[in-house]
Amino acid sequence: MNAIAALPMYNVSSALAADWHALLTDVLKQVDPMAQIVEPNDLDAFWRQPGLLISQTCGYPFVLGLHEYVQLIATPHFDAPGCEGATYSSVLVTRAGAQFDSLDACRGARAAYNATDSNSGYNALRHATAPLARDGRFFGATLETGSHLGSLRALADNRADIAAIDCVTMAFVRDAYPQLASAVKEIGYAGASPGLPLIASKNISIEQIGALRVALDHAIETQPVRARRLRLKGFSVLPHEAYDCIAQMEHEARIANYARLA
Image (cartoon, rainbow, N blue to C red; front, top):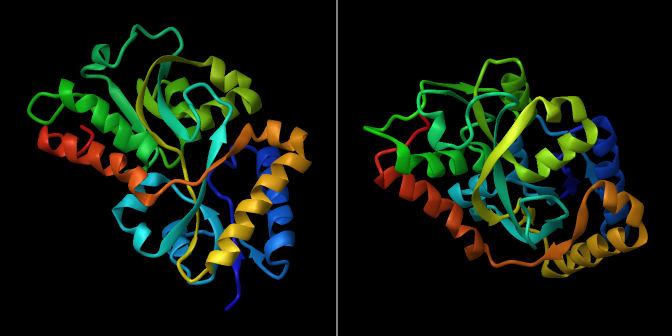
């Protein structure tokens, strides 16, 4: 079985993508030098590959069924506003200069989201909006953009009025795209939960999982400048039950008659 690996979730810029690739290369050198780093087109299928040695996923797909195929390696700690330890949040953002100063003020506005299987961009926003909705509706329109960057650009271009952005992504945007960051303003946070976990196939041995954890710590300790660029501070090993709060957010929105963002 050929081992495969990828860290696809925070490649916000080409420079960040190169840093993540370099970190992953260093980890694999210690654990399995023959493992292949790939660029997956279909993440859902990739994460279910029996040879998956290490990757990173969103917590929402994890609780919706991916947990049956993978095991948790670790959850990163990021140095970003909205993060605390292994926990992260969604930043609620609107266009700079817009009249909206809270989520409540966005009734009838246009909401952008990256994808329906995103915890930070969809699930957290739906959960935060559910208490405000009437008869299952709150926004005047919704727009699926395909990425957090796409949602931010929709705000900047006046194609949408509000979006929920992964706070780690937002910090990377401030670093890499200051002009885009200045085109939006923050109006709050939503959906605190464990951050995007590093995962491996359930076929990976306990010994290899332990080696991956050691290698990840080593990659931070030996390359502190790169770790700062990646905003990486360390890792926690969490039980899979720690992510149940993400499913609970979905459940609470559904029982409030707000099963979809609308």
